[in-house]
Image (cartoon, rainbow, N blue to C red):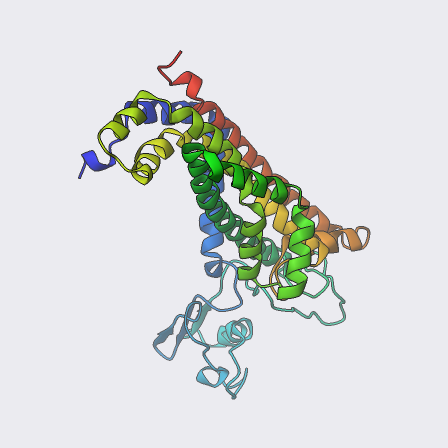
Length: 352
């Protein structure tokens, strides 16, 4: 089992090289921490309590079904509506035997928080670290949940476009002939279609759901990696190890999957961070233009639009989203530069 996960000497040198590039390495660590916090955002940004102790019984509302208000203190509700845990926490101050533990940011991702005699958007204060947007939703929750949606959208698009692009590119380079010529023409046509405009047109027809956006983005964006893999495969198929595999009777698919793709993995890894950043900015642009994720979901693009609309009256919205976007894109760029430097084949190859 130990040998199963043992890296080759070349891979070990590449990872050591990546760790030595401190800017990229620490950017990866910071981004990983941000992703973990984002994945488990409900534990620290939520209007549901983490723990409720009532009459000796413990409740964990965060990841459970809706707990009706009548379950707890009768002062805050007697019906089947969901418990207002902030009010419940305030009511329990009189009774020390009961308690409520709320998340660090006690507001939901779509909750509209009203404050007496104040209009939206609310300035930082009243429990809102970065204020609220024009609909009374907490800006911190919008930033975190919006990033989670944008990242997973970008990650899914990246994986699916790379799987499709790498596979077709390898076949083009390996088989050549009519297959190569056919897909060259297809890619030339696809490359001339304006990416964002095409997505906007199709989305306006089929609807702005997360699944629709992912499928449409992959449909129009798979050609990017195909050219690179086609060129790399043309180069690799003339190597001695490919000739030896053919002589031993290996099938085309086995040669591509077991030999060519592993030897061109550097190309894939190098482009991945930049493609990830492109996906995040792409979804933000679509949300900004009104063709992204449906309006009830947190969105960086919607926050950016509000920041422009309230540039003078609610500066905190624009400052928050621009700072968050700058941080994430800088981290991803530093990681991409470090990966490109660490996996540079000129530093590890034996070919002259």
